[in-house]
Amino acid sequence: MLKGHVSFLTAQSSISCALKCLQTPKCLSYNVETVESQLEFQCELNNSTTKTDRNALALQKGFSYYEMVNVVPSKGEF
Image 1 (cartoon, rainbow, N blue to C red):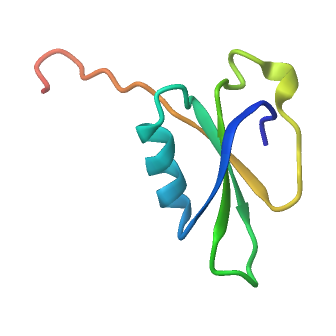
Image 2: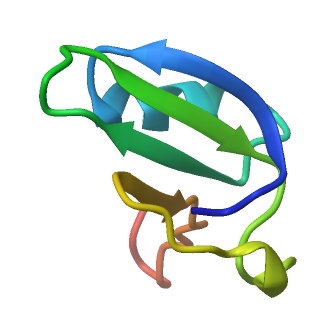
Protein backbone atom coordinates (compact mmCIF):
# COMPACT_ATOMS: atom_id res chain seq x y z
CA MET A 1 0.00 0.00 0.00
CA LEU A 2 1.08 3.55 -0.62
CA LYS A 3 0.90 6.01 2.26
CA GLY A 4 -0.15 9.62 1.68
CA HIS A 5 -3.86 9.40 1.06
CA VAL A 6 -6.23 11.90 -0.45
CA SER A 7 -9.31 10.33 1.12
CA PHE A 8 -10.83 7.20 2.60
CA LEU A 9 -14.12 5.64 1.49
CA THR A 10 -16.04 2.38 1.39
CA ALA A 11 -17.20 0.70 -1.81
CA GLN A 12 -19.00 -2.42 -2.95
CA SER A 13 -16.09 -3.66 -5.09
CA SER A 14 -12.50 -2.94 -5.99
CA ILE A 15 -13.76 -1.71 -9.38
CA SER A 16 -15.82 0.92 -7.53
CA CYS A 17 -12.57 2.10 -5.92
CA ALA A 18 -10.97 2.42 -9.36
CA LEU A 19 -13.94 4.44 -10.63
CA LYS A 20 -13.77 6.76 -7.61
CA CYS A 21 -10.08 7.33 -8.31
CA LEU A 22 -10.83 8.13 -11.96
CA GLN A 23 -13.47 10.64 -10.84
CA THR A 24 -11.13 12.35 -8.36
CA PRO A 25 -8.82 14.83 -10.13
CA LYS A 26 -5.84 14.47 -7.76
CA CYS A 27 -6.06 10.67 -7.47
CA LEU A 28 -3.04 8.95 -9.02
CA SER A 29 -3.27 5.57 -7.27
CA TYR A 30 -5.36 3.74 -4.71
CA ASN A 31 -5.19 1.07 -2.03
CA VAL A 32 -7.96 -1.47 -1.50
CA GLU A 33 -8.44 -3.39 1.73
CA THR A 34 -10.24 -6.66 1.18
CA VAL A 35 -11.93 -8.17 4.20
CA GLU A 36 -13.51 -11.50 3.31
CA SER A 37 -15.98 -11.41 6.20
CA GLN A 38 -17.39 -8.05 5.05
CA LEU A 39 -19.30 -7.11 1.93
CA GLU A 40 -17.54 -3.75 1.65
CA PHE A 41 -14.09 -2.72 0.51
CA GLN A 42 -12.08 0.04 2.17
CA CYS A 43 -10.55 2.36 -0.43
CA GLU A 44 -7.74 4.83 0.11
CA LEU A 45 -7.24 7.30 -2.71
CA ASN A 46 -3.64 8.51 -3.07
CA ASN A 47 -2.26 11.73 -4.54
CA SER A 48 1.04 10.09 -5.49
CA THR A 49 2.44 6.88 -7.00
CA THR A 50 5.46 4.66 -6.51
CA LYS A 51 7.11 6.66 -9.30
CA THR A 52 6.71 9.98 -7.47
CA ASP A 53 7.22 8.72 -3.90
CA ARG A 54 8.89 5.31 -3.85
CA ASN A 55 9.63 5.50 -0.11
CA ALA A 56 5.90 5.67 0.68
CA LEU A 57 5.26 2.11 -0.55
CA ALA A 58 4.80 -0.35 2.32
CA LEU A 59 3.50 -3.88 2.66
CA GLN A 60 0.35 -4.22 4.72
CA LYS A 61 -1.61 -7.44 5.04
CA GLY A 62 -5.02 -7.31 3.38
CA PHE A 63 -4.24 -4.34 1.11
CA SER A 64 -3.65 -4.19 -2.64
CA TYR A 65 -2.11 -1.20 -4.42
CA TYR A 66 -3.07 0.02 -7.91
CA GLU A 67 -1.78 2.88 -10.08
CA MET A 68 -3.55 4.75 -12.84
CA VAL A 69 -1.82 4.62 -16.21
CA ASN A 70 -2.14 6.83 -19.27
CA VAL A 71 -2.78 4.82 -22.39
CA VAL A 72 -1.68 6.58 -25.56
CA PRO A 73 -3.02 4.98 -28.75
CA SER A 74 -0.44 4.18 -31.36
CA LYS A 75 -0.59 5.87 -34.76
CA GLY A 76 -3.58 4.71 -36.78
CA GLU A 77 -5.68 3.78 -33.72
CA PHE A 78 -8.39 5.93 -32.25
